[in-house]
Amino acid sequence: MTSSRARLWQQLTKLSPLCSGSLHEQYLPCGKSACSCHDKDKPKLHGPYYLWVRRIGGKQVNRTLKPGAELERVREGIANYRKMQALIGDLLTQEEALVLEGERASVGEGKKNFKRRYQSR
Ligand SMILES: [Zn+2]
Image (cartoon, rainbow, N blue to C red; front, side, top):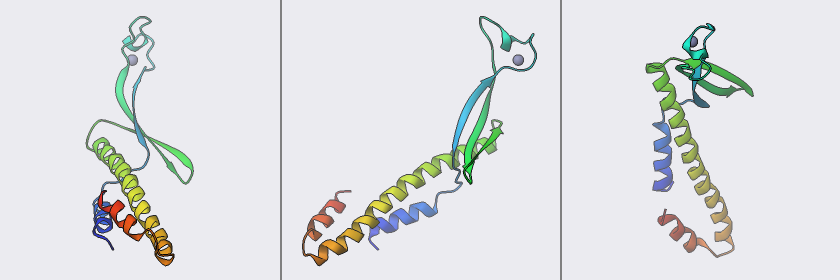
């Protein structure tokens, strides 16, 4: 395994917490018609509320979160999930290049170019 691939795997193991989906900040009116959130000119909406939207088995799952430790963990988890996707993308690029390198080596071309391309990353 090349050192850069080992490093990518190592970075992946550190990604915790891990959460899929996205967070949406919301400001909402309440049910009391006399409340300032229903003001016609300058409605003062309540919030922020945070909606965590993700998919589980093809179904959208929503979860409302209050500001606090749980929300921050989900926020961190989502950031980690995005890092994970970027790392997996890099890893896949390298793995796929290796698959092709085997083919190129067998026809006797491209191996030097392949290495040079990788060192510049
Ligand atoms: Zn209100």
